[in-house]
Length: 445
Ligand code: AMP
Ligand code: GLY
Image (tube, rainbow, N blue to C red):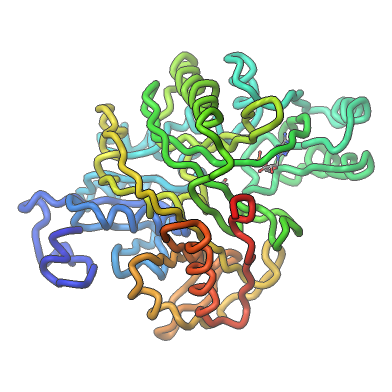
């Protein structure tokens, strides 16, 4: 937000739309949908655009109020978001969460003539239905684990009994990251299948049963517009709660970029055998993808294979990737929204690493409302970013308000330095109810 800095040097205080008529000086008004760390990172990247004059975020979070105006509309209130965009003459809307996309926010906005970045409801099926994604990969020969889909509990159980362990069970629908289990025994598999197919824990649906693959996982996100695929840098998420990849699965406890263990040949294989063919397949199937296509990939002994696709930016990967983007992200979002060529991207060579600070008890039950101290001091260091994932403002203080609370990201000349810097920043944050992993990046360090 160049103009803003020239008016208030050294600050990034957003302009009140009433003070300066943004249309007159042709500064853009952007609406970001969502309110977690991922959306905070998107808002942060947009705030660096010299074209962007005002950012709204719905519902936003307590950490971004110095660069965006939070709007009390939930990410799934599509009609309300549309009305807000029309009323406030928003130039471009950027969608974070899959829930908004699966509800067709992009279709609704486009029908109303509004510019929006994200996939249509039909294209979002690549994430919302595991069965759709697996069938697409099978049809277009995209490498992935062997699988079979079941609706009937007895048939599913018979298939599992005939196979080997561990086996991978995936509920075929959005399940807030909790729809995948990897039972090691028949007993456990039986219980999980009963949960998903008889007790309908996530609703009535199908289960995809997959072959268990091994190897390091990595996240490959691309800006996609039909057959045009522009890759972002690679990153890796850490899904388990505790050091040494122990404990329950979480939404992600940290991430880093780039990945030294992915060779140029692996990268080319991922682009040529996965990302580009899948983008082309979506066009051929009549549901061209526009937005961020996220390939959750694994480097196996038999080559790169797909674990999952997401139809949106990854969380927490986005929080380490976007701080490395030196190009103007408004141009990228605009190009995809308008169907014009996506500009070439410039990436900082500096690695970035981020530690998630989560409420004690997460991913199970946890308390809210614990005060967090030490955030102001970190704002002075331009190589550090603190993205808020689940906080609230209360009596002039920032307090915990979610399972994952903060993500502290540092950039430095090497991954090792970035690790030390991020860890020191994490340790300087005082709160009596947070925990974090210390070994983020261990695959690379
Ligand atoms: P998903 O939601 O499909 O990404 O699955 C969640 C996690 O389960 C992944 O990040 C992997 O760690 C693991 N997983 C999923 N599918 C497989 C598979 N076929 N083989 C081994 N691990 C898997
Ligand atoms: N980090 C995994 C995801 O965004 O789904």
